[in-house]
Image (cartoon, rainbow, N blue to C red):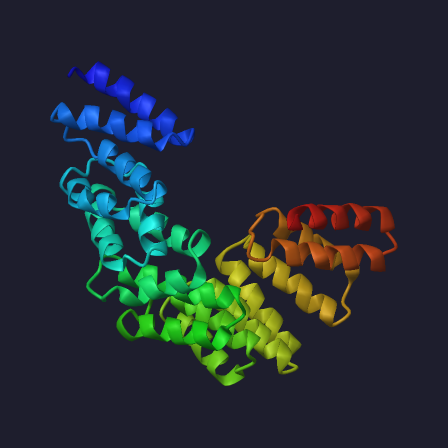
Length: 308
């Protein structure tokens, strides 16, 4: 079969898949496979079609064919979702490793699937199934910390971070997430300790400087808090998180509202989702305090739109 004809059949197969015509998908896949194609798409489509038709045994009979002919990452994410939701963790792990050979960025995609698309318990179980020799283990295991944090299970999130930090003490995401969770749990001594470790070892040091400033503000040392934020701004002019934090610290201490608003406006220019909505909330309060209700209402509307 010519490449042109194969491509036509592949397009037909994809269309039938989107339309939910799974029996037709299987027939088209078989046509391509008979042409001695070494492409993985027909096997992947056929596998998914069998699963949708509740013919799991037939699906798993061709799983090795997918691995042996893997030539694209297309539909791999969908296939992994099926495998993980079916608790076929060994097959999901095997497929992940083979896909990684095709695309070294694949594990970033897998992390997003585990975080957003898979049931919580299944994601956790799959992550626990992986051994530390798996590619990018530390980054996939970090998803576990993120999942716990999203559910406000901060102690469990810290435990997940600590598991990573045993072998990867300078892992940026694990250190940052642990810092956040310690702050929320008000474990102040540990919080201060990790910010100092991050500053010393250059692990997002400017974020750590600002976080350390928050520690000193809580302890009543406003000048020390501001000096740490200003140090971060000196290192990285225009750093949005530092600008927002400076505005927040000043507001808590009843400083000049116009100056606070200026810092807030600068911080919002970065559109960083990690603090953007909180900065909008503060801007709303500042504008109301300044008697600028119409502007405050516009900020409120933006905040609601972001939430929606």
